[in-house]
Length: 283
Image (cartoon, rainbow, N blue to C red; front, side):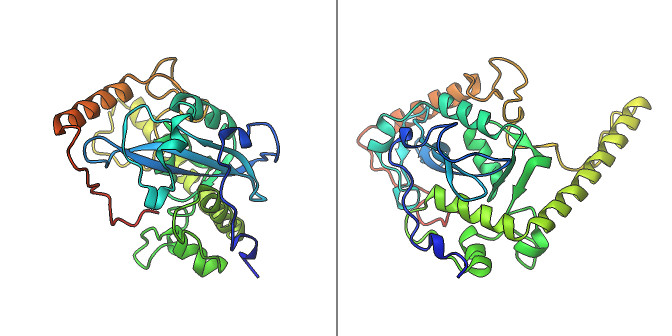
């Protein structure tokens, strides 16, 4: 029966050292990634990376790590993330995790669900031609009637007969579900990517022609960008020390953390904190 292997999926490793890059399962050319986030700042709404899992096409974990955010955590979102304070207390810092995952994903086809959020949390982007997004890649097949993204658990139940996210989210389970959806609809995904790449290539030609003619292209529709996530793809940062560099020290990141810390301090340490995200159905 489809999905039976993961009906009772084991929890991800509890220690970062349980799975290391380059050991255990082979990565291969196609990888699926899923991240869990925690909230920072006075509202707890801004998200920071708390854990990340990468699986291969056989749904074997090739990387897992908890991550210590650069900002003080004000909402662990344990109800969804399964993350608690002790899990992050001795976790590696964000810069190290971002650098490791960036190196692992470089040049690979990356599968996931609504990956723009995962790449934003990881702090780097990935070439759009190498992204297979189960939330946005096939809107006519996997989207709503209006073409909007559907939740991963709904897609898993309908197309894989697999009930996921019953309780805390497991990044291993979510990454495996996205990978299984991709494998089921691989021809459709690859055709959609090829057509999208043709459109981007046409947009690049029009942009180049406009520039050659001295037209700045203001108001023109150039289509999608070539990147999913922050500028500076996995292992392809634009410059040392820039905010887009995977694992780099981002000035804007630290400034944001300082501003958030100040906001929390103004609230007062004794103030009760109720997260505005409570009740929102994530993923």
